[in-house]
Length: 515
Image 1 (cartoon, rainbow, N blue to C red):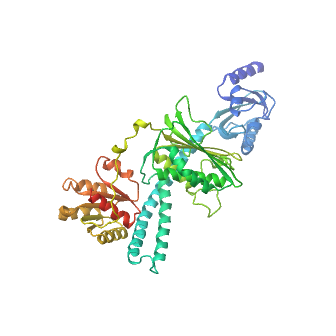
Image 2: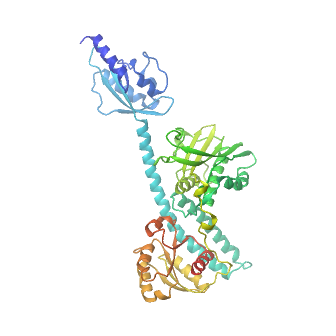
Image 3: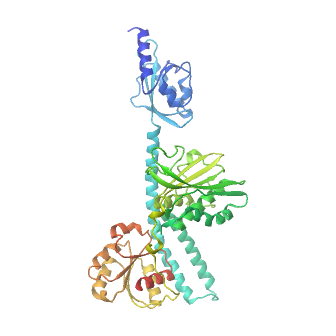
């Protein structure tokens, strides 16, 4: 076949190919390229006469140069493609295939397959797995710490009963208890990240929440930062734990403050937004982990916008990781955004972030929107009965089932001090034996959820048919919803999260017995 015919066929192939294709000289100069290649590099390139290396990133130039030289000297092409990054307006990765045309010109055909989305998905999947693994670790560590903290706080309460204010030991005991409470707050952050903290969701008006919180946020961010709150209309309601929701806003406000060293503006804006195929999420928004896309529907959107230093692109996915921080050592735990992420996800919402270095950062929080007619009247809402007075003494028999000896010892002493008869068991099997011997005397069973052997819910299922009137209080360092699905939300039970104080324990027992 004549050279002119060969070139014509090649030109036809290049022009019609859906792949990004270029015909190169043996020196790597582009003789011809198609529209797909120009679309891939996202900027205008001349038709011919430019070096193919001009669109290759600096770190890949050496490898591409070596491969072109190898083919020019008659070497066989590599069977596997070369993974490269292109110099373009956007971050683009591609698989590069180079092959030599067997003719007098020794020209080379370069074919590029866009793998940007595939690489992003691989990174997100790996990131998702890492976040899940760290979350499981954090949840397990937090559970063990909650047992230790329950005992520490509890024994401090017992000591305070013998060393009241004015005693020389009172201040020392209070120091121990306050530091234990600080540790408990850190554990709650770990549980929030791992989505295992106990939430008490209720219908909230975001406008009211932000209005109450705005004065606190103003004090936190300082006088050199202007706070601007813009309330949207017809927002509807969201279902969330108010304390955890406030923690989200505070954490984001503090982060914004730290990004505006010389002052600036923090804007908090709310609106009602509908997400569907006609109104998709903007592509410039980055999620913490793209393990799932936002579900179509109506949302209450809260935007927190600052004009601070911004977040470098390479750190965008890392900022939600626990213990990752760009702050100086000692100035933060690195759990702020990890906690925000955990709370938002456990609430059933979504969080996205967009940022530009030197221009600021925007966090967008999406909460499922509820219409007024979906909210139960106050008379229908379940309310938790509380003791009418501060008198926490009572009468009755309590079976305390707890495998952690310090926690069991503290709880048993605390309840005996309040007037209760306490039977103890260190596992589910022992508890069943106690119930078979003295079950008719037991008014309330207090049981840990996770124990060696038979766990708490399984033990209760075994006991319940023979003793249907006995009341149950579950205690756990994990969230209530960790076991409620398997135990059954329609069953009557009570829950007391660890760590708890002597007062909280006695109050819960009296509340349950009086029901």
